[in-house]
Length: 442
Image (cartoon, rainbow, N blue to C red; front, side, top):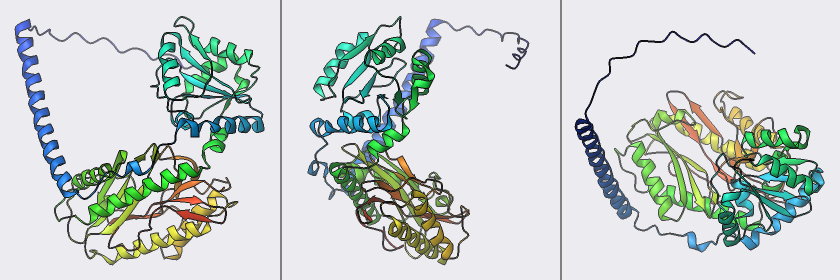
């Protein structure tokens, strides 16, 4: 261990400024008044902008009721499927903290804190919950109300922490090896390992990927609908664009259109002109001008399932011919990747197909102009395993869903990215919604 640094010499205290209670209250009141006035102005502007947008997009109505959420009864068989995955991997249990994997099994919502609350699923198909003792009544009620997996509650008191009670519960059930869900926090694995044995606490990445990567029919239904609604929102915005619209205003329009259509938890990356040359750039205060390139990367959630769509188009005739050339090369790369998708093909081959198409169009190969992976898995999370990157040897299987999003980025000039969600089928692949077919419109 390196020696502790020598502490700096203390500095003399600054002269103390006294302030009586009256002046302190006056200052506080002034600050509070200023804050209230600023908030009122912001709220007024927000209401005015929301009213304007509601009028602009008055033809868009909430579509979310056309699709029903996946019910607790529909989720129940997933527990048995996980048990089979555990047995095949010779693992006795999986610990799941609140997050996407818990949502996969249950509508029980719980905020993570320093106090462990988790579901433990065993290879025999049973399960139990580990909960703080003082929260047990609330946990029991929530599990019952939301159709959570039925199992006993193992409660732990504040003075003992969760780890020994959890280890004792595992031993009592004959658990020799437990995996930790990959999004669980590091201290959960560390502290359980300290009392249960480090060699008996394993990573659960492969187990969760086997569980969630292949989407069932209901999941695919919601993913397809979410993508279609996002595409519709982008088209609706594109039809109403006007010169002078700022990039952040464009983002607000995209968000509003998606929310009117019934998506929630929306997000948007609106980039104009040279700002799009950075794949994860940010609005820079640019305003829409004739011939400018527009890149919109956006999505939202429908009953928990995510969309992620990117469109790039020109506002009128492009200022430079390179924009159209780059767009055509990116579209060819997206199509080449899609055509390569089929069960049994390694993920890395899909990424390579897109890069080869960009190089064939006359652009430098590798990561020179296309600096990110081709795509990511998508489902309950916007980004989840598996991934289309050049090193992933995982073989594609029917039901796996991905983004197919090649791009070309020329610093200081322009950026083009096209992104659609695709699903592997028994004979190849399918895509959700419509491809963008022209650089003139999304």
